[in-house]
Image (cartoon, rainbow, N blue to C red; front, side, top):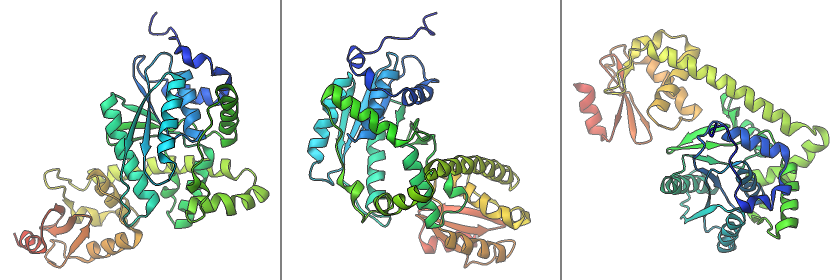
Length: 358
């Protein structure tokens, strides 16, 4: 009987329950439904309206589970120190623990946004492990999802790239859930206004969200008003495309896995039969290569690089006697040896040549 009984809210939460939106709350409850009754819940808390309201609704939906808020201090804005204090204050109002971490954003080839995201997820995973949190909620909503689909479409990501943000994903040992991908941001902002009126706590404003140097901000400022005028339901429509793409991606993943099993794969050296791969219809050769790389925990190659790999693997001698086939990917090499395609890491060009001569 005890397992089905609703657990009491933290006393602090009852003060702010009037600010909760029923649909937002139901979505959070749905995301938490499968968790054990005593499982700790995490919320990634920037201090903006979206993540603040997610923390509020998570506190209301927690049913007595411990709630932990995680704030990452990127040091990219002058007000970042104030945001950190602001996040701790909100956590106190909600009766939640707050954990914060300062990170250094190292900008590499993918730009500022990607570098900040990588630093943020690494820090969140570390803090979650320290706090004993296996499930963390993210505040991405329908507007975010639609923007992501549109940006990926404009980059030429292809049908599977339109999956955009997944409702559930695993990263560095943490399960991330996005309960609000089908919820319009207007509802979140309304809840934030009500909460501010009740508590006096106001969400922070990140100026980078209005900085047109960033593509997402430029989309919001310049393109979104045009889309709103001519296609008012574009966000909901693109969200539907994302869900359809996710179904397609799952089907493609299952098909690639089935093809992979027919390539005589060997775990010992991460290899597969070149002849069996060549026997696949051409349209299925690239997906199984992607599956192989993903199974090894590697990033996907660009379309141009993958096309070059396909060409070389289709032309190389069936037994791999062409010693010039050395395909570089990240810190690894893809080589052909004795009729098998192998993934080799940590070797110099000279050692690669020796390996192929064996």
